[in-house]
Image (tube, rainbow, N blue to C red; front, side, top):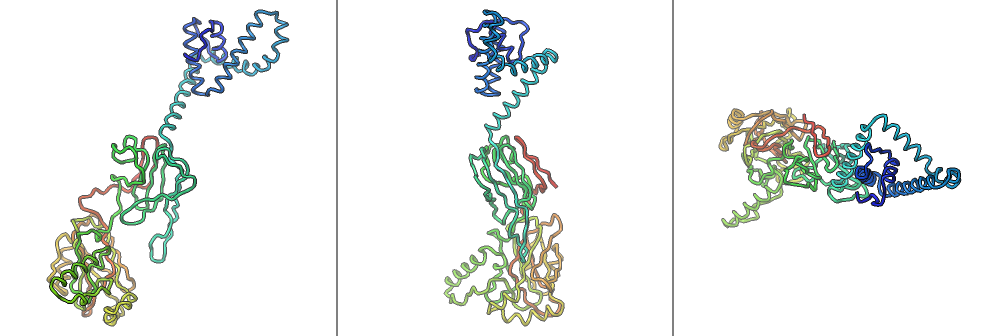
Length: 454
């Protein structure tokens, strides 16, 4: 209402409404003021001040033309207002056409136009308030080296403005996705008005951005997720349970300095060496007797030697990966050179076989030989794998296999042998942990994230 000139009379108000294609059924001054005020507010909001000022100038021109037509003879008015008619010609034709259509279709067209303009205005204001995510691209080309480990691809790059995080990236920049266990590679991406979602090669779902009503899948009380974070209710890739701090490893015997903890990875071997040095120092023994030359686990020559690990808790086992000690590694260590002559005849005779076992109950540590192998098989889920032509054994265990103890044992079919392990990885999760569905695709919309699961 503040945009309406207060000195306008009924004729001026009616003329201004006529210029905008609006007709009032009962043209009282109050009705005209209210209708014109609403039109002017809608005009400023939708098309802006420049066009509004232009329309006000057209109103003044039309009023001046009407006044001159009333006060002077028609012929003199035509001579003086040719320029005005030329300027108003296009606008007058548009007004006449709009008025004709309005009279034909009634109030429905005006109501629809007002509703569309209001909806578009609200949408633009909402987007300006919430912001929009940056452009996101995924390099889904997965390249593998000779060792089978991913060397590139699956990385996420962003560029552009991101009002939700108050950031602007002038060029494509790689997004850091934090993981405690291994590199996370992405294959799918979804962008919403204020948040973004990613799907990894393992089927995990990562989201970040504005968490409006929990739209990112995270807790509702967290308003903003500042970095790609895994959604807890979806699938989580299995982790290497051997890296837990409280796991313990043992073997049937130890060859020189080849500790059982070397096969676990991490800092387990360093902690065990430190513990043994402290024990020897306390007992007064010579510390030089304890050597750390070997970097793998190895038993002495015996019948059916074994290596085993006690996990931190009862776990759901997904797969077990066993990396055997190769001849090249043994050649670099003086303590293991004597074992080559005993291991190579086994391979030439068909190669050794390894029994990999998962048990919920502890294995008997006192039994040795074939008796220990038979009893361990009887209480566990197990498989026999051949190591004749490969130095790495992988076993994908049956679904829903639970256990707390893992054993790798050499099946000695032709006399005694030595068990050498470079690394043992037990992939799985806690038995109490919820296993969510894998995500194959994701779509982000305003205030929501839709994940397609398999």
